[in-house]
Length: 313
Image 1: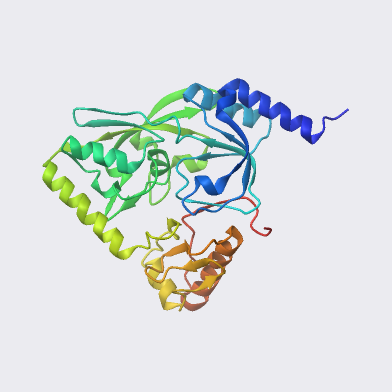
Image 2: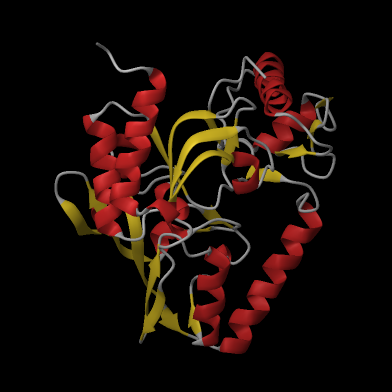
């Protein structure tokens, strides 16, 4: 006799608790509490592994049992559907947050906020990480997408990454094997999960470093709609163009569906202006992509990841 859905769910829950401890496994966790969009329904399972060993075992369990999973950092580049996610959310923000500095080298766990790393670097008069001080994500997410701003990227400062590889365990991968490109990396092609990164910076003037960080902070404040929940820049930069300019030229600045809106401050941002649903945000994305292609011939590619079913809810 085949097990019922309830029995299957209970076995999955029990196994996740065996691996990570009951205190680190939640069911039906509301994802709006874990994303910068402040949107999202329940995740069937929400797991916070305490270390690389537990993380590897969770991923191996998922692979062996055909369980869909998603690795979550700070949720700053993610839109989760209103109906939630039927798989297993593996959140690394809670435990993978060790940060230490040895000379001009920084080790940062994948769950460390970029702002925290930038502040620590500045305190030690280490320059090169200022660009990341205002990016509201984690080290793990930043490496996976080779995050960048104001002419600098993660690939400019990273020495290597600590990675969990199912079936092997935790290993160090040098920067040249991470295949870091414009908003892409080797992590998009396999089931490796980053647990930490090593950054090689150089000594500088603390006053100059802090001055630059303050200047970048003011630039972001002036140009970006930081007062509203969003997932940051909505689209990748098309070659030879700027997404925000294409959207504005298409007459879409301020375009809205319900509480979701193309920012009036910067058209490259789609914001949760007033209790937007994920469906409303997705409708804005789809309309913007369609309209921009019609008016300019350019196909915009979302920078944000979408999780769940957006045709319901």
